[in-house]
Length: 293
Image (cartoon, rainbow, N blue to C red):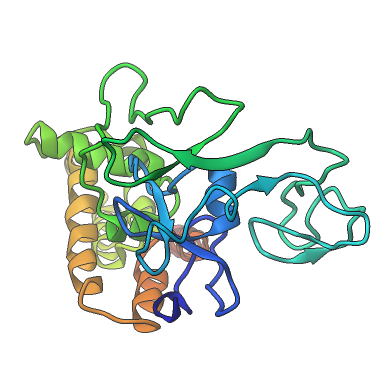
């Protein structure tokens, strides 16, 4: 259990504490708060179809009785947000910390989520079942084109590094690998190439593209402007491949790290940076405006 203290729950984005009830995925070993797993109805790693197991790796400690969960709160109890873990008054409908809707017996119908014995042929004796749904539905990357199978290997490090929009990028990467291709199309990378690169924390690439665009602006050549447009088209075609290789290189570095350095590295190099993107747009626009005067 202590091995997970300090790591980040992928659902609520908060660090695990020693007193937390932690479970892990049997497929990708991603740790979750028990309540987060239940609310998400399974592992949060995109495409992963793993079952729940105890944090110590023992399936026998996870029973239907210990993992039974009800969406009702006693009147004298506080309500803890399942997303940010903040304690709220028992009359609150929304979390005072993150604004997420709170699960209460007053505003939500009573639903029991239990872990019941699975198929005897299944190596894990427990799987998640929800009476509101007819089994756990397999996720698809695209509604009509690419489906993950239960044997798909999911790189949890890459998913964590993607952060925002991992539900788009990770299946796109898997599709490209399955078809052994480097080309696809990314509208954001085509329309706002340097700013998309910076937003995705590929600062070196973004700075290089901005520098080239700035030099072409100073020269003022119509021919070079056409070349710039052609370059943006090329980047729109290869952007997803560039991003995939960037993430995989970072994921290789993460695999050799231990906590808390692993979480710090992912926070610094993964996800998106809206602040840096906005500041870059403002700074570059002001620079162009000053030169144009």
